Image (cartoon, rainbow, N blue to C red; front, top):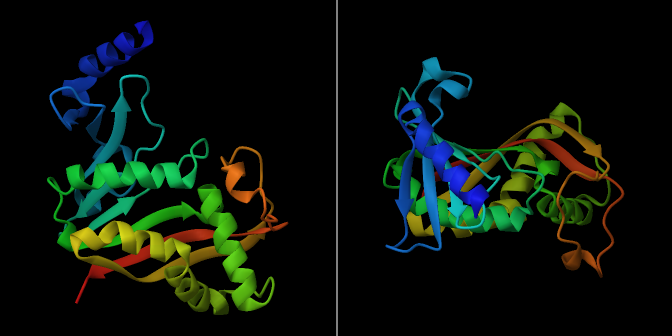
Length: 222
């Protein structure tokens, strides 16, 4: 309890500096969503109007997952997930479902054009499932030459990655329409990435995982 008090004391002290706001779900919430102005902390501030990070806080903990929403000078909205290796992909998706309704009050999600995932391997569970799909569809570890990037992007947009985000974004009338990739290669699973081992007790994890910098392209449902 002492640590919790200190956390709120520090946050309160930083409120005016970081433009921190709190969105509670009820009068006595199980959790709160903190919003923090991160425009000056992210690269490219000259090309956007604003950027906001969102973090889920409970009475016992503060999440390590802090996605950021930004609006460009032209009005396009994008999301940078900043997946954290100490949390499973599914847990971060669950938190994103709670964050989106709060972010939608500040950002016009009709203008959402992209979601930056970062390195695919940092998603842990997702990277495993996507790689299993990839090996089945491509018949093994196919070429990762730049000439194959478009094909890999199409695959990712239709894989579990695209399906998950279509489900999350459907209530907002949005859908995944494609994906862009850079620096595609295969890498071995490594320790710091959090994986829900119970989900893979009967599944053989591939020796190497598909990895790349990944952007999802988003548009309004027609």
